Image (tube, rainbow over all chains, first blue to last red; front, side, top):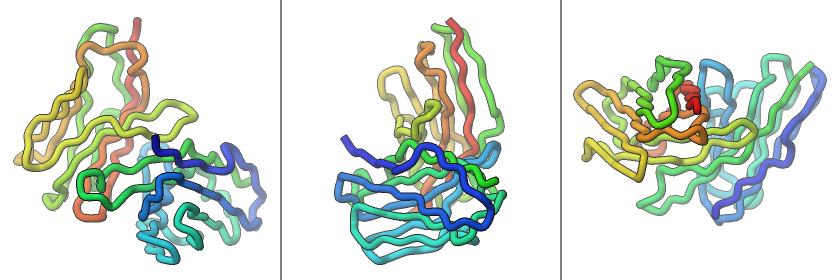
Length: 115
Length: 110
């Protein structure tokens, strides 16, 4: 089974803090993604990475950055947390194999509260 | 700009009856469609998918129907079980672009 692990289930941070959200996958997947989930808005893509050291902006990258130094790990960084970044953050990974390339596997999520 | 829309935020069904969850999309370039299921405190898990070359895909109690001319897909669950209570997201993809709907919360009552 594919396992995507997010380091924290719940986080509470203060406005202006630098926040790191970590994600690790164990299936040697090439692609990894960060989403945020908000009521009524579904999952919105923040950043994604096709491979190590590669990153691409998603639909809502403002206020975020990412790091992918190793294939299995994809980190989301909030440089200076703000209250509007309070949300559920979901990490996902995906293989590039033809048959399964559309299926993303998700972690359990990190619920971040910024006070 | 929501390219994938799930207009019903919630749905309540009696155990044993059919659940029908609907999804509409606007981008005609989407060629692969998926349904994900999400329980509280867990990440979404893949449920069933359909390619644009088909109009139906069945997997046990779950069937997805695709109407390309209407840009509409639906998920049928028959018979519904209390364990099916969850939030269901539909997703549509084209190449490397995947878009998710806002989700529908299904409650199956015993």
